[in-house]
Image (cartoon, rainbow, N blue to C red; front, side, top):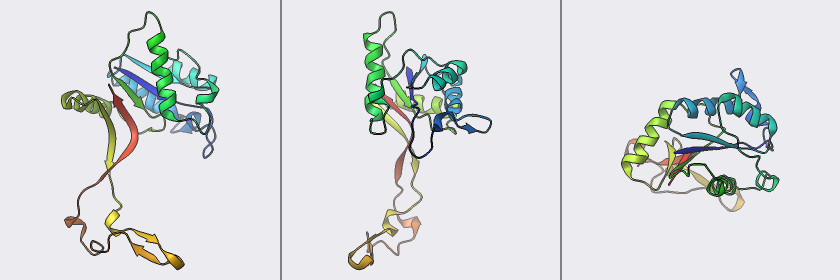
Length: 183
């Protein structure tokens, strides 16, 4: 199983966010250390367009076999395209074991732990899934939400459920973006 971590240099909201310090070390170091120490992955591959990120990754023990092309590192570039680029690079490389499963681990998930990765891998394998993403329970209730109608008047999305107590409402989940397993 291969982990792929996408970490580009640019970010509009937080410049150089992947190398900004958090708790005494670069943001990306947290997820690198979790992925490597989990022992879930045969390799932890970093796809980046930045020499500084590449150095940090190598110092943590990650594999940086290429520098990502600029067209896959822009603000408009899609993560899936950078992931496909990394996998295609592997498929065309000689003397490299081709992974049966890839896990995209988000560089911006500093609280992801090695044990969480281990548990997720186990669930993925036992469940026989072809793909799986990490999720968290939704705290905000869609039944209690509003949209703005004409004249900026609040309009309930679910008028029949607006007064229901949370104990009577279904539990919902949302992808939290920490990891995605793909066969």
